[in-house]
Length: 349
Image 1 (tube, one colour):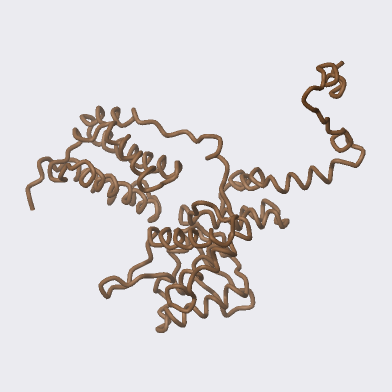
Image 2: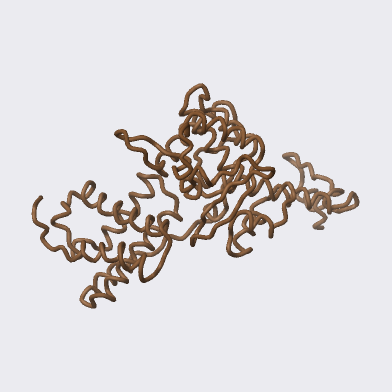
């Protein structure tokens, strides 16, 4: 291996990921994983897209333009949403803040990175995206359940929808976290901040689970990840990219039979969809908040804001038959009618 020109950057990254975050800041394993993914994505981008070999990389070679281009690459090439883009930037900022505290000579590089702002959501991005029940059913029909992979993919999506769990919460599940043979079957999830919660699952989901474990968990190793892949003979946890990939394939196929299927789906849309459907069916927000594992009720209110259909039904019920909104005649105007007639029709004159 060629000698690294200046290993100060890599030593600082090592301390940040392996000492500061776990031992001093005491963040969760999933948070560290997110930071590590961000660092590796940035390094891969600089190496593969910018053509800078890592042994030549220094703090001085990473400027605000590089970070701007990296974030645009995430958004346009990897199709990441604005929240993911901003989350990646926040990780980078945190590292530079740490580096500047550990070595004040690096403050200039921190100030350079701070030139890159978080990207503001436009009016459409602030609205949560969810699927209709018809769209959910159409997508769940797409996996070929005559194959092992099809059984696995369908069960994964069913479990995500039934539990309303985050993608990472499902991927972190072990076989022991699914209690199927009880009067009230449930799954045990570990959410943000290592907070644990139990979520009930439907009887039909349990049936899918039992069919799945016959194919994938013959040995009944309770410590094995519930969802895994085998690479080079080694069992590994299924990755987020794997999930996103097969969901995209099934989404594209489902569009051919259901026009309610969105152009693009993400794993988190299953959580949003289930939440909206439960809220629409009458689940109170406090219970929905606890079910989702939200630390604050305010985080759950987005589903009340998002459900315009419930608002429309409520408004129609509250608007009586004598309401002016239901009794006002629609003005019919024909070309050639006088300005005076228009004024009279709209009671302006």
